[in-house]
Image 1 (cartoon, rainbow, N blue to C red):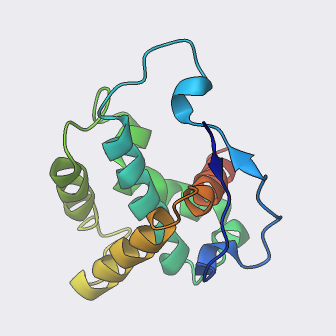
Image 2 (cartoon, helix red, strand yellow):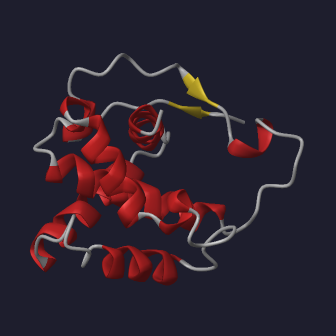
Length: 144
């Protein structure tokens, strides 16, 4: 069964966003192919990466999509293709992202990175998955 979009405190990513659909279907219902077990860890990397870039661009990555997209690619090994397939564990996904955050183009501070992880936790804390879906849609827009 699909998840129902729930209410709750809004993440900064979602301010001014269009309303969520009433239900969000499970990923396995959107494809006839088997969903790799590690996909969730790659999505974790991408959500933390998006949260980082969102903060890096003061909440408006769409104002400089080339810079924001380049930062996402620098941070997220699964988006840049430097990791074939998916991350096998959450620890590996977050460690790779933390190491990528040392790149001079995106480097800030450990506290900044920790706040991006906390933002991703807020996005993932929505039982319906709507916040994470909206963040992934924003990520998709930056990479188009």
